[in-house]
Image (cartoon, rainbow, N blue to C red):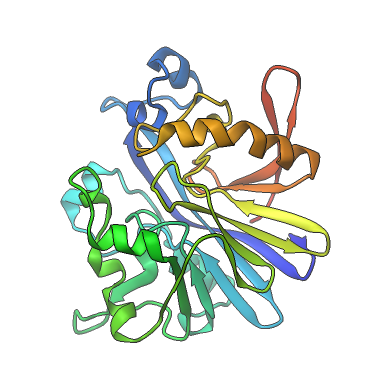
Length: 280
């Protein structure tokens, strides 16, 4: 899809599963299970959807999925399921690892930045995209390197250590334009420095939602993840954000929808309704 001078494509790194109760917090299961049916382990199916932006030779990724540096136990716990990875799908589009010019992280949890790095033929950790500048919020980076006991399992140092060694990591502070037309916007909630990414061009706006509103099933104000460290921040921000998104016709991109999903929201007087757009 064209958005001003950008071409937007959703690139999937496959699917995985997380506990449904954790994904919906205090919402009773009999409500969320109608939207996202749980398996026999109470897990729901989620996508690993990354956004590719192309403009004048630039190829920019927003988030990089779950990667491939995990073992069989990890894959079993999180129900990782895929026929093709992010790299496979980029190859299908004729894009090599060397072609990626920038990577923007919404935050630094393992299911969002897994393909930041990979192991080479000798087993050494290297940057997956050797010619890319990687952008992260300074506050998020500091939290990732000094996590609290609750967050520790979500941050895996192997997803960013090689970037430091190769001087490929650029840290930004607060809401700012990281590249022309691309803004890293602090929304907090999920983590203190969690972001969404806004793409603006030609009078149009798209928003990569990350873990702020992870799926269309989280559009309702109280449908907030138990994983969120600051849930009241999400609940306070979400209504106004969606009202502005509807009024200004923002294209919303959902990172964890089980099927790659983007669209425009409207309100029917009771609920938010999503008009889907194909970004494949």
